[in-house]
Image 1 (tube, rainbow, N blue to C red):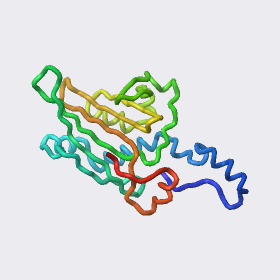
Image 2: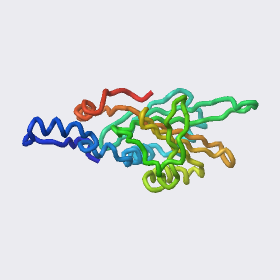
Image 3: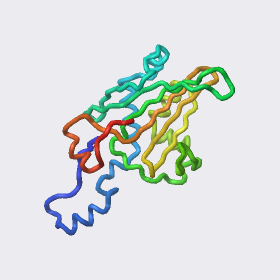
Image 4: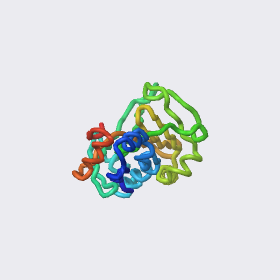
Length: 208
């Protein structure tokens, strides 16, 4: 995917460029394509296999938030991994959740088509989260579908266009203790050659 393709040329008049720049989706059309999310997840999982991450979790390697560098679109990004433990209500046992945060790499979060949404819910103390349908995941997010099958987990995808968040949870508490959470949000490439890209799409900062 070429993230450095900016439309417009010197042959356009200033008035034409002004009008064209108001059509962000026309100019940066590739950044409205959900395949960015799918490709980022695929790239990360090719470099850090989930079974390896889960084994490291079991060895208490991710008690503290751990930075992991990964390559996507020929650039290096910094993600984080942390295992969160919480006491189950009314029980003396702990639940563990492996939390992974990655960069959405300039994805522009357009509103979802109603046909692709199961429901709109309140989550993370915010309104407007869309629960994406199984058909949409199967068609557009093959990396998520494949990981759910690999882990033998139920998958739930929450999407928030307003707050620029894409959250995925994988759970199987029946036959295994698997609870994996992947969130994609603002993040930066460590590569100098993406300065022009971030000038267009916002400031650079690490994922928290």
